[in-house]
Amino acid sequence: MGLKDMLNVSSIQAENERLKEENQKLKKKLDELGYDDYMEIKRLKENLEREIQASKRMLANLDE
Image (cartoon, rainbow, N blue to C red):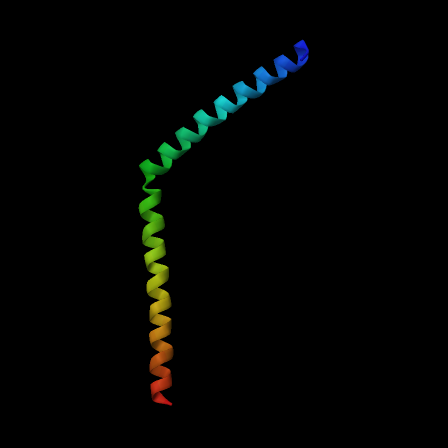
């Protein structure tokens, strides 16, 4: 492995570490903003909307 290759590996490792740190900061920010809670509420809302639509279809079939 030549000197250029070793410098390139070192540069890639430094960039990788920087990206890991940035990723951790972004995860922390998402936690602070309550992202997981938001996604859970969104999922529950979508489930309720599907249940409502299914109930409406069932009622429509009863009326026929």
